[in-house]
Length: 230
Image 1 (cartoon, rainbow, N blue to C red):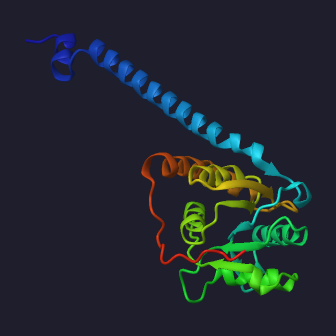
Image 2 (cartoon, one colour):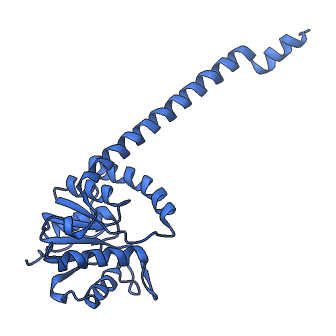
Image 3 (cartoon, rainbow, N blue to C red):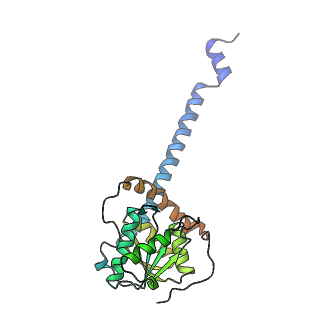
């Protein structure tokens, strides 16, 4: 007849071995998490080095043929505050003769949602001639916008117009796609959703690093070439 200790060992295995196995598994898990955290930190730091190419006023920006303006949402009430500031900053660049053309890139995946057109109308209302505005209707994400700027619209040099939280990722993507780009920060106020934007950007940075260094996806749509006439 088994004693109490023998029955426990017989039914559940050696408690000492189980404890040792759990300790090793825990160490492996902890080590894996540390490695992942280190990798994410390295990727984020690599992308953030692009901040050196950011200008904080149109007056300090260099001259480039085109300003690429990224979409950021609109509604029946008008452009979102984030997007309105991007378009205003691009218009300031145009007025200061830093760029000759504005490439408005955004989402037009539905008939009832035309982000580039809303951006165009806003810029025209601010005094930019329609002939100097080009629309990209398939800029569904930063990577698509820049890939299409290069392959569809023939952009090789540009100023990227967006907020500071987004510019390092946009510049990193542009440079790895072969576009000679510098950034112009577009924030003109505090945004109510800034903390949410910052959190989303951390994941977006890692995804951009994967896209430009490993997966190299094609945009959702390409189409025929339409080089911007300068």
